[in-house]
Length: 282
Ligand SMILES: C[S@@+](CC[C@H](N)C(=O)[O-])C[C@H]1O[C@@H](n2cnc3c(N)ncnc32)[C@H](O)[C@@H]1O
Figure 1 (cartoon, rainbow, N blue to C red):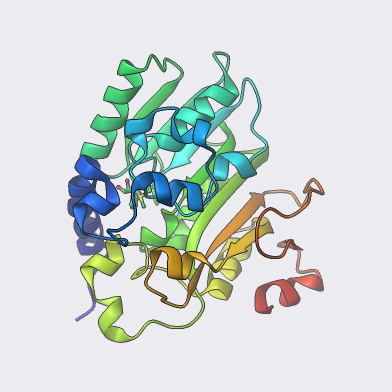
Figure 2: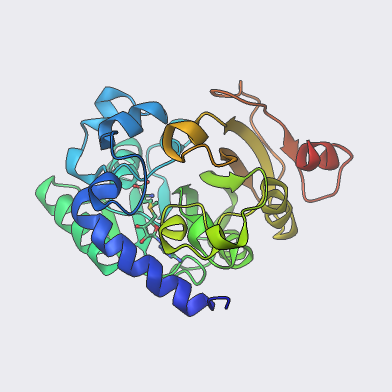
């Protein structure tokens, strides 16, 4: 029997509540236990300095480094979708400085409590962590300069709602930087029903092209910044998937920069230009 969206969210809250104590590897809910949170973070693109920033906030849960991909600057208001213990939010807080602000939204109370406690302990006065659902954001319209999200949207039952909410809260010239797990072939039915695979960012993941299509159909444009296929054997026991890194915008005004890491770089606008098919189907 298919689980409804409410059940899926309860499984996720329970799973991430456990993970909030020890991180992904300590919880045995996901990932290869031979790897530490530091090993995982290095393999997905964090520098030693970034890893050491607020060490306890790194639970080894990401699948990329959205801070490194982003164009955030001093004074920006940043929103982190599914902020966990605040690892990326604290790095973003350094980038935006005292005149800026970082808001983390997470559905798991224990993650919010942990992030708030680490913010207090480490003197981050420009961060705020709010309990909430990324499918129904507790954030005002057009109030955000930069949205980041690291390995979270795959967990939301309705990716369409997430991107529609992102569009609503983003300023017209705002940007979104996402790294997320997408499938390169369909999962079999048993794997789709597996709670550990759901919490482990696989069970709820969409096929790559379907994911990109939803971004476009939500009235957003995207540029592919990277596609990390190595992560499949590094963290996901060889399941045929990748970490997709996207820059997303309401306009189609992308700054030309060299693609980071492995993979291609191409842009797709929601206006239906000819390169769209190539990008989505390629
Ligand atoms: C894989 S972890 C990533 C955490 C963080 N981004 C990082 O890289 O450390 C996923 C996080 O998303 C949160 N989450 C899952 N579904 C959510 C939803 N619908 N709304 C808000 N947060 C959600 C979980 O509670 C968890 O903290």
